[in-house]
Length: 303
Image 1 (tube, one colour):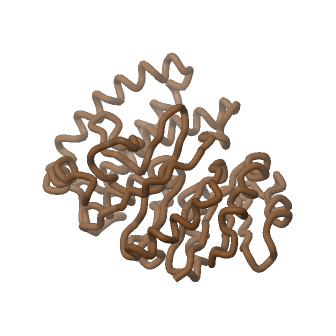
Image 2 (cartoon, one colour):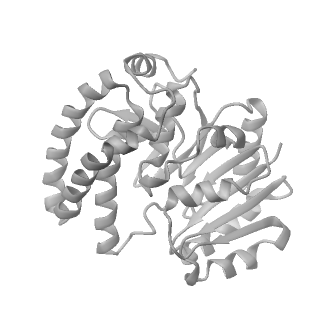
Image 3 (cartoon, one colour):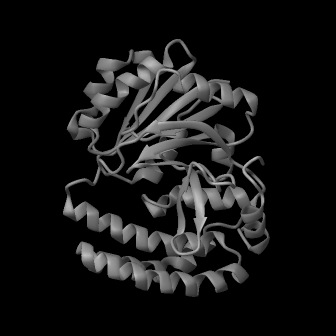
């Protein structure tokens, strides 16, 4: 057993200086190690980490090429030698008892993924939910049905399970890679447990105040919704879902106009349509279809 906290960093030094001390206090004497995949090494995160953790408590993996959140997670998890991994965003604060509660939940049922809650933007969310308009959204903590899967911001996976499913689809780069994995896990019969623990989460620190990065995010979200649907849905469900997604993107386009993000949004839609066939070929496992959808909509969270 044992738990490794995996964190992908990008322009995160200032935020990590606030949150990491809370992680250290929460870890206490528990058998927990840390791995940091730093996609922006020049901003000083390594120094922040060294000031908080002993050398034998962590591994630091810098990559100035910035391969993305999905690739950063996969790279870090490949270095994990514990039975379980906690994916945790750098802008999340941990209450003193948080990691002990997570370890206790793992011990109760070591075989299942766990969705840990996040409090952000005035709401509380635990895991990922299916949405007919946007395909995937944050699942509200009060939802009657269980999560489709964990959110990448606070997710526990058995390490072997993460590897068996190929981890995150790296081409997505960021935003949607956790939903892609969640759909694949659910289609294969694996159910995610929702842990009654909600962690304070700043949300969006890596793109805040940067118009160029906001545009990149709009591009990725538009593209990745289409790629996730193409990869994980069965053909019958995709034939129904794609027209709905097309109408949804028209509605989203109006919002992007108001935000000044219409052009990157449209580029994302175009790239999603072009790249969908290749994305589908890159997943050959079980896909999410009408049977999975019926099960998800009708099975209560007690599952």
